[in-house]
Length: 281
Image 1 (cartoon, rainbow, N blue to C red):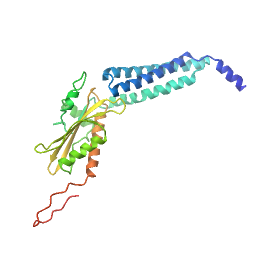
Image 2 (cartoon, helix red, strand yellow):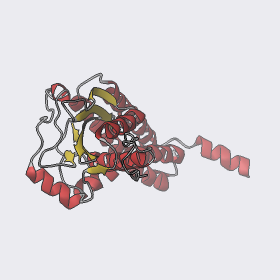
Image 3 (cartoon, rainbow, N blue to C red):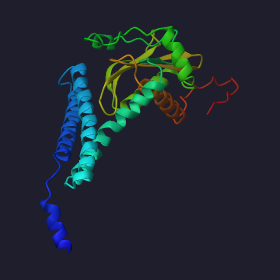
């Protein structure tokens, strides 16, 4: 009986809607992967690559509609193709899940792309300014006080980093953190006399699409210690979906942790007749 039922089932035609749902889902997956590769490896400008990605999302959405129609057809006519529908839906969910999450973030977060610990005098893009002149690229000039107000409302904890180490050591700590993250360092200038300000300019990439986001770090003396200011800005797009704020927050945490684990610089020995001074640890 089971063999007869299996043979009868195999003789049923495959739903054309199920077949098309799978074809559309596979095409959407290939287009999505291709667009990500195009952006990450710089084969085309960002905007054409994004159009390809949005087209892939459109095909994934169409695949879902065709799959649902195929499910109804199979239910009514008894045709085969349920496995193809399930495969199509699985691919569509994988393609659409992260963009759907980003869409929710876009509704919740302010549409800004320039985050800094010092909105009054943000670290400048000097070497990086030459890389922000392409078609559609954001200006190297800070976005302004309106952006600062939106940043303060959304991420009030982003503040300058105050360290209990001298400016040279603070610069070395910041440079080590940037190097560990494997960002592309465009320019680095240690705080050497008479200029006592250290600067680091680097390019970070977003995890999936690999969009370039520029980072500038400024290290200045602050009494016996030092102060580190950070700026992270998307090279394209008006809103960054919180990417730069998350980067700055992680960088603040990493620099603080690295500085705390750094032995304090030795102070020069006191004169023989002078009373010994306590050394901070």
